[in-house]
Length: 240
Image 1 (cartoon, rainbow, N blue to C red):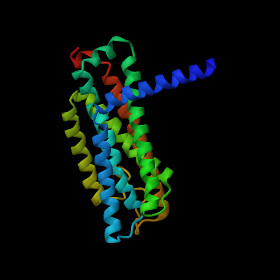
Image 2: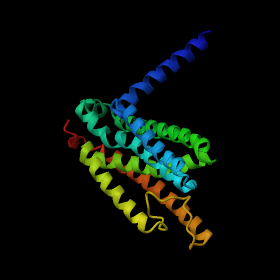
Image 3: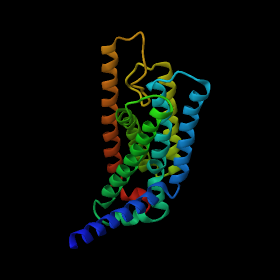
Image 4: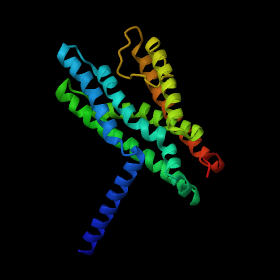
């Protein structure tokens, strides 16, 4: 009985901490980003169903990319500013290394939540459009999503402004998107689509490009994360 009570208390505490961090991470606006992502996904899928357009994994990848990026964007770009506005950043700097643990946990929660939502949407896709490898598809999507979240976090530790971070990230993402539209074969792309069929490219070369792209994004993600955490050491920059 005592063990059950202990497990219950731990579960209640964990759920309370999760809800508390969710409110901080999304600033109480999670439902709006979730609904916007769902609308974007349903418009893409609904358009294919209405027009009877042939759909492949490449299309599904794009349909899921927007809601994934949308959901992870706000907590990554506006998190530092929210802490500064609410003066909670003073608490984070008071306890040694506490800010690093807090931000790592927040980024982890945000990315795991996005993964679960994308996984459910990918699972739903097989009933609406076509059968898809929803776990593999979700993992492939999370690689660029994780990069964008860590990149936005890194920029936010420099600008310390959510709006400034949003502008920089949108400009960079748009530039990469334009380049990708003109050169989809290059592995140096955030929006590289591993399911896109390149007819004039040998399969082995394409597989190598996919591997390199995922490797570059993962390495870039950890470099952005480390640089962002290093920026958090500069207490004087956060106007404490």
